[in-house]
Each structure stands twice: as structure tokens, then as C-alpha cells.
Length: 101
Image (cartoon, rainbow, N blue to C red; front, top):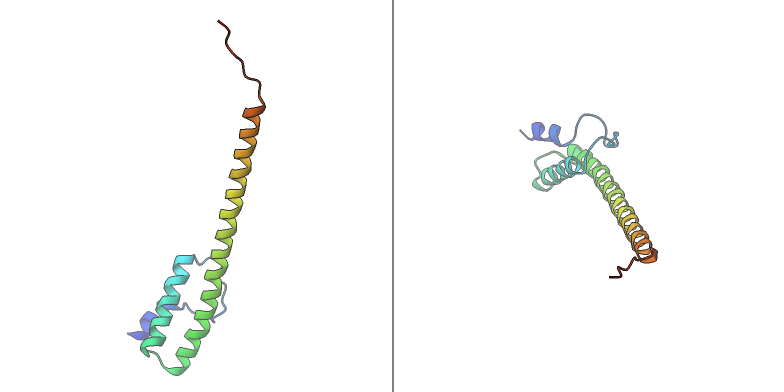
């Protein structure tokens, strides 16, 4: 049974296989599963070492995805703030027409 859950946690291939298509959520799920298996001792020593190596790769991947997401949020926030300043400056510099009755 542990063998089956291990195949879900670590797809075939070595620990450093290409993770570019792996979402943050999927990587985190694999990481949690591997850590659970290691902590429970449900896998042997060799498998535990392989799982540890895979966990390190997954952790790095998750951190990279989070860093990229944080950068996107910062860039979007900066762009929105710049647009807000531009709109505010444009509206304050446009001549106002006063109605004279």
C-alpha cells in the first residue's frame, strides 16, 4: 500500500525531473505526502533517502513559484498605483468648467 501512495507522491523519474508543469498545489501535495511517509517510517531507508531528495526539489519548486507570484503581485500593485497617480494628475490638471447662470 505504501508503494502505491509513493507512486502518487513521486512520479517516475529522478528527484530532479522537470517540474515546470507542476502547479504549486500539486507540488505541495506531493511534498506533504512524502514528508508523511518519511515521518511515519512507512518506507525503507533507500526509499526514504529518495523521498528526501524529491522533497528538497519540490520545496525549491514551491518557493520559486511563490517568489514569482509575489513578484507578479508587486508588479501589478505598482502598475495600478502608477495608473491611479496618472489618472489623478490628469483629472486635477484638466480645466474645470464652471457654470454661470
